[in-house]
Image 1: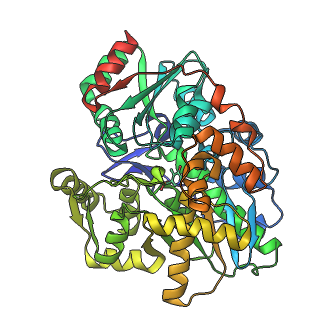
Image 2 (image 1 turned 90 degrees about the vertical axis):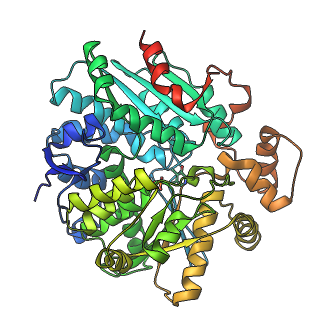
Image 3 (image 1 turned 180 degrees about the horizontal axis):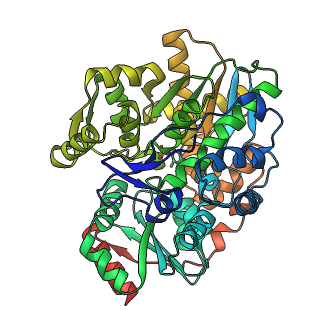
Length: 490
Ligand SMILES: *Cc1c(COP(=O)(O)O)cnc(C)c1O
């Protein structure tokens, strides 16, 4: 059955292409499929990544022509430098799903390599000829992946807001050196939540959108609030499962767990969607860093963002408002948009909300929450390297430790897949220091040293990063984001 798309906060109905084009619903809610197509996993056994992707996306994006969709998939995933796209690396009893072999070395590439194609095709289906301006708030990785995807795409502009002091050196340099005639990269004096709130506010400003429309401009989003970001992420859950079957680690239909380093709850929500489609997932283990709002939610049923924001060595997870959690509550409550709307109003007025007991217990059936502090993150990187010669990035290390805790606590020894969301080279200083101790050398020297000492290869994607010229220097207050856009448009 083909799903109808609606908002988490009302019963508006939209087509897939309109949902992708608009990014967020006018009522402030997020677009969601009302139901999930089911797939027979036996049929997917011999599919390669692109076939798997087509199989899954064509169920959701039924207003895009099949041959156009297939073509997009081929273009998007030819940008990955391994044939499996998202290969599993295994050692001991661990399965690490490497999602970082795309153009910017983070898992965001999986969705953002295809999103620009989906977006431009959606505009054409909707008969929209306005210029599309993509607004993006980033905790470090979405920004670069979106820039790569949208740079020099006709009839579009991309604007990225990043926390000026909240990203790694490599993440920052990747963004501020981005070439392209239609790209804008701006630092925010604030954290990711400030950037994301600013973007959401602009989206909800009907007057401003009217003003833009008068100039033949429409706004859209490359953040995981856009459903077009989430759907391509479902694919690698299936791909991982099939790899485990092929490696004879599991039998077809045997259930597995996935452990996901989580920030905005997009990645793990795609796992939930995979489960709704019939992938045999036992538990989705949600791993937070020291900003453990979600862990607290899983312990108490209360979501409370009134707490200190902690800058960690896994900055892409430094998030207190996990936007996609709204979608989970919608699905778990069986599409109760009034409930979602009330809870989200509570979140914006008091910074917290509590879900009804029956919702909480349904969430607990499939999700498990854990967290890992800074010390344990570093210890995990060093321990895993010394025991298995495998270098984890800081985010993946959070997931690794939470999975260890989960096993110890529950005794659940079924096969588990740890989603590895970034290459360690994106966070070289933190990774290097976790293994070899504090160093006063700069990031770029340490990239070479990490490669030499760990006998690994510097990824091509960043081999020239030190010498790239800086093209974007603006840093602004979060309150001035809208003004910045107005000025830029002229
Ligand atoms: C974005 C990101 C995350 C968090 O993913 P969400 O979908 O926001 O939960 C984790 N690790 C890395 C490296 C990321 O870039």
